[in-house]
Structure formats: structure tokens, C-alpha cells
Amino acid sequence: MLRIYNSLAREKQDFVPIQPGEVRMYVCGITVYDYCHLGHARMMVAFDLVQRWLRASGFKVTYVRNITDIDDKIIKRAVENKETIGQLTARFIRAMDEDIGALGVQKPEHEPRATEYVPQMLDMIGRLEKNGLAYKAADGDVNYLVRKFPGYGRLSGKSLDDLRAGERVEVGSAKQDPLDFVLWKHSKADEPKWPSPWGEGRPGWHIECSAMGCTLLGNTFDIHGGGQDLQFPHHENEIAQSEGANGGKFVNYWMHNGFVRVDDEKMSKSLGNFFTIREILKLYDPEVLRFFIVRAQYRSPLNYSDAHLDDAKAALTRLYTALKSFDGSGSVDWNEPHAQRFKAAMDDDFNTAEAVAELFNLAGEIGRGRKELMPQLKGLGGVLGLLERRAEAFLQAGRGGGMSDGDIDTRILARIDARKAKNYAEADRIRKELETAGIILEDGPGGTTWRRA
Image (cartoon, rainbow, N blue to C red; front, side, top):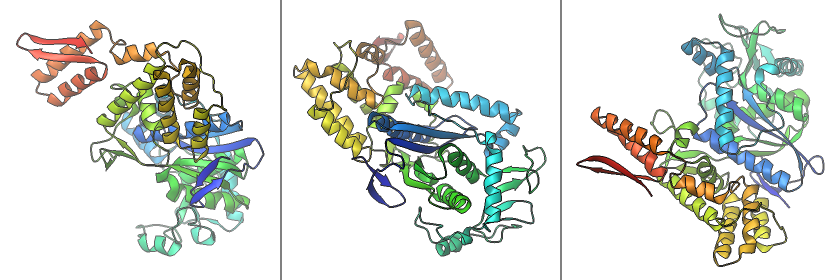
């Protein structure tokens, strides 16, 4: 039986869906004001693996992953760029689709945008007000009365007293309590706005997911997922809103993927170790990045470095090498011992680390002459969204086969220009890019020459 670590219960639990044979799952998506970064890639791939395994296990899955297309950051960025909010969000939604599509992330059944569900948000806020859990403040905002919801803090393990001790009263705040959070923001000049019973305004961030999740999946559904950073306050607030408005339990299983670190430090723009998916894919094949994410169990921390990506490339190359002479399609015999161990790993809270280890066991058997296991390796890899290309295509790209002589010469000229300008960081980056593609540079008295590895 599949077991899932439930963040609410703080333990692994047998997965029992509300409706036998069916799973309804909601995952918090991306606020589209910039390019997707490595943390987004980790979340997207983690829950792509969850929905893939649920389907492989025979469940009918309804997967919802939202897009936040109205937010303070979006408004600010649109003003900075001198473009409309619609232009900004459309551009970055296209970029998101390109980036996560390159990583093999499958589309969900529903991808709702917050701006399409404002009426449902207003309805939910109205029910909260009727139930004595929301109030209109003097500044025009509608806020949630946190202390009136008895279960607040269950998910994050935080007590109201501890939270209250850490809060500062905002200057000029109209909140009745510093812990209260906004459900509806009153409109400011030149901001998007919608009519409401409380005056023109726009939704707060937390109410978006409650309204979209309940509308598309029902007032109670099976799985809610997202990054660990969303556990508090976002998911805590979702529980308070949804259960406060609807009564009854909101979600049965809460899942959170682990943080991404870069060279053992937290990834952040202020530390200068912040990477977008696009930046990484300039240096590495998309499947290498997916494999790097997949081979770590979703709840574990993920430590990014060039050395770890190089190791992932070498490891994925070993798997493809085992399939070098195979041109067929993958097919899985679940009664075969490797597949049984693979299944046991995935049923243990989606333990992809152990599942990937079984792929290497299969590759080892194939290397010792058991060619009949090739369809099994390719098939099990496909369950994880891996090994879906012809082996020779991947191996040729790894040798720089995907880069023409002209492309290489252009990059070398750019490196020479960077060195002349004393931009040594850029020169080193170009060398690294070429090395990753299997192109070795040799600097000598006569200039720079190159060869394929």
C-alpha cells in the first residue's frame, strides 16, 4: 500500500483516497512575475513525480496546479517594465511552460489563474464574514480573525501565543490583531480592481488557493502540496479560510517538498547564488537537471552545485549507455524482482532515491549480458520521466554532438572578447559551458583550439 508523509500528522500514513480509485490533488503553483528558478523546478518535478506514480498505480487523478497572476510583486514589476499586468503575466506564463516543459513536467488537468476565480473568492469571504471570522477594517481591507479559528497552527505546529510574541504591530494598521491576515485588499490608484460588497479591491494571496481548490476539487480533497516554505503562513491560512467557510476537513494529506541549497547555503538573490532554470539549461541538458532532482527523495534537502550536476550527468550517461544498443520501447513487468523493489520504494512516500538505485541495478545486470532487461530499464525510467530518448541521441549530445562547429567558434570568439575586456567571470562561464557540452578548449601561443571529448 502507498504510504505518504502527512505534514499535518507528522508521520507516514497509509493513503486511503476519499473516492476509491480516484485522487484529487492541488499544488500551489507559481506567481508569474519573473523566470522560474531552481526552487520552482524542484517543486514542479517533485509533484510531477507524485502524479505520475499515482497514475502508474492505477488511480484516476485530477491534478490542479494554479497560477497566481495578480499580486503585489506582479504589479510592481509591471510598473517598472512600463507594461500592462496582462502583458507581463502572459510573457512569464509562456516562459514557465517552456522551462518546466523542457524538464518533462506534464500539464495538470486544470491550471486555473487567480484572476478567473474572483467571484468564488468573494463568495468564500462572504461566508467567512457570516460565520464571524472576517471583518472589514477601517482602511477598507477585509481581514481574517485568526484567534476565532480554534485549529490555527495545527499544520505548522505554531501556537498563537508564540506567533503573537513574534509579531510587531504595524504602524497605522487597522487590524484588530497583528496575526489577522488580509482576505480582500482595498483598491489603490492605478491598481487592478474588482467590485465587491466591501468596495473595489483585489483578493489577498491566501484566499486564491482556497477558492480555486474547493471550486475544482470540492470542499474536501485528498492531497495538497507545495514547497516547504509555504507551510506557514500560506497553507496554515488556507486551512483556516477553507474550514472556516465550509466546515469540515479541508485536506486529508499535506505534502511539502524540501528546500534547495546552493553549495550548502540557502539559495537567495542577496547571496548571489540564485539560478533560473534557463541559466542552468544553458550549461546542462534538461534531462540531467530532472535526473538531479529525481534522484533525491522529495522531502530531503537538495544541494545544488556544478559538481553535483556533473555527477548527475555522468550517472545518467551510465544508464543511457546500458541502453545503447536498444531501439525498442519500454515495458514494465511488475512481477520482475527489480520492478517489485522499484514499486516498494515508490510506495514508501515516493522514495525516488531508492527507485533510481534500482535503475542502476538493472543497468548493471544488462552490462553483465542480460539484454532482455533493457525494456524493463527503459520502462521504469519512463515512470520517472527519464530515459525516454534514444540512447544514442542523448550520448551524442553529451559529446557535444548537439553543437555545430560554427556554434563552437562563435562561443570561442565571445570568450576571447570577454578576456580582452577583462571580464574573466564571463570567459570562465563560456569555457564551462563548452566543457559541459563535451568541447575541450586548449589555449596556446597561436590562439585557442578545440576538440570534442
